[in-house]
Image (cartoon, rainbow, N blue to C red; front, side):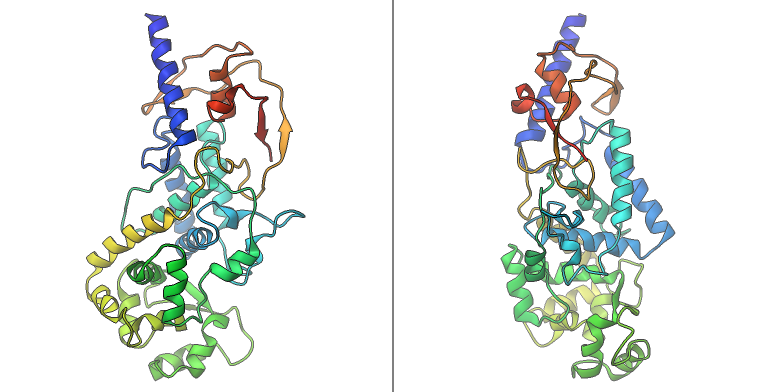
Length: 371
């Protein structure tokens, strides 16, 4: 009986890890491997947003800026090195992108509860963006892997700027496989958060399609020169997921030029009007577009890596095989199991479970990513 139980466990774990190695994204990707992972992410995110309401918008923005640069691969998290041209210093991110410490905290807590690096930093970004909203909810497809490099040049070229007009925005999103509805729905993420004076100064002093009272109010905190980092809310309720962002656009009170471009006599006007009066439709479309954006060129299977440190790229070191293949309990089907597999030096299952590499690579020479 014990032999039969172990065989079942062996097959179940191998199938689960094979799915991790070779399938595309799925909603239940980590259910068998570490069922505590997603609740842990949610708890850390909620704690961070409770401490600073602005953090919700910051985490959402990190995921957006990550996906628009060579896909959703956590490249935005990598620090500058001699071989990595960090996206953190790109124009859209420099002195602007934030929330990195929250991602570090999530990674630490998730790896602790899972017993090893199991969940990618790219998936952490996707789940954190979802959990930060206190708005629409959706099943986040999972199974992304992390990039080994970054590209500041691509970030400068591909992240949409607050100065774009509607044709440029449409082309920018089309490059990512996103359509006009995605453009308007995802722009609705500006229902949360703030923007720096440098991003809207030209609009409040020079644009003509702006409410004059609104412009004067914003000028009080954003002079013609200096005070570049002064903040203004992107809509009247920057901590709430609602439709007031779109109501502002209809009233010519969009803070950014790129915001107001969505309601400027072009083909997106009608959708902006719909969202401004129907939060349910906006929420549904936003969730669908978030899923679509999260599927931009993910690394899966044996592509990329699972980072030990979300800020660091690969550093391969040879490690001796541990004496015991299982130091932490297995979590199968939501319950904890302390069943042990063979620790024989040639046992590939032990290698898979301990090193978290793909079944195909289990018989290789045991190189794993190290911080």
